Length: 362
Image (tube, one colour):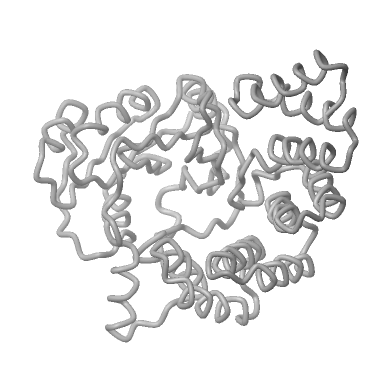
């Protein structure tokens, strides 16, 4: 059986750290906590779980802090979590089973990361992360922000999902500030860093600058496909927010030259056609979205609703607008199978019930 060092970096996490450690402690053979400058009782909470608590002077570099933590792990594999992450009971059981069966030749174990949830608590936005890393195998974190370890060797894609359950917002503008400090110091951005810098510009509503950075990223040969597709989508969103829907449509259609369409892109195109009241064209793209299947192992950002719920809801509207009432009812029922308690589904259900009471005519 393999052993695990849980290595975490924390700061001012007295509210969430205990919740996180309670959820994972049964699977951790060792817990390493690196505090980057807490002013609350974070270290007192950590001391209830481990005596391996270290201080790290924060230097605006998440990779430096994570590498410091990983360097203090002594077990076979190193695992990371953020303080506001939780390992659900079902995932804990899977992780305990994985410890019993994991081939020691595996270098990296990828795990789903659920970072947003719908009203019923189901994961709605997710992607894979490198979660278990073989110790003493030369792996290092890279990137001051949005840090990552590039997987290599034998990689296992597991179904041990980690949930990100925030209780408070992060520091506003922190990531953008770190990137701009890096640029001001004359340190060039890698293509991956440029992609995330552009996203931070977008989040901070600096849309024209975001477009320029996404353009530089897309002009760089050999960049990762999933990041390229996201760059097209977010660039299109910039143009929409700047009042240029035609340019947004051009970019979304251009992205189709990269690979088979993702459901998220199909939904974006469908929505733009709906805005133009071109319901047949919109229906085509929503039908295409509904036919796609998510691939968690791609590492892409996945909006689960784009692979069923959103297409069915929008196809219901398109069909109704096109005078195809039975088709509209069919799509409503498909959406209801996925989210029966959703307020929009209930609204549509009441609408169709009123049509039936009125003789079935809209």
